[in-house]
Image (tube, rainbow, N blue to C red):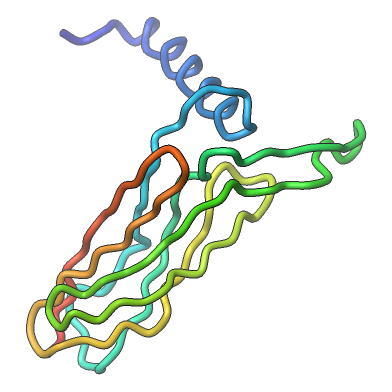
Length: 141
């Protein structure tokens, strides 16, 4: 069933409002997610560096401020992010940064070694509330 256009906007506004409150440590839960910035489908190098965005971890808070600068401190909750390459078993760390006051983490992988052929690379994030992962396939020629 499709809602009429005039009813969609308020629903989207409410969802966006709840997401913003969750990101501010208001007690609302925001599901974890990991997404990729357009990775290359094919590559002719032995390594690749991936990047993307991820949800703020549970316990992330913003504090302090003035009317002219409303946010003084941003403290992400405890979390870990890793990558794995199913093609060769390689694993490594993901470097994530909360560019406050954005409502997400920006992340970059370390150099991921590639096997010849298809490489299914999974990036995972885990916090005190749970974990999630997303995967992408990069083919080394």
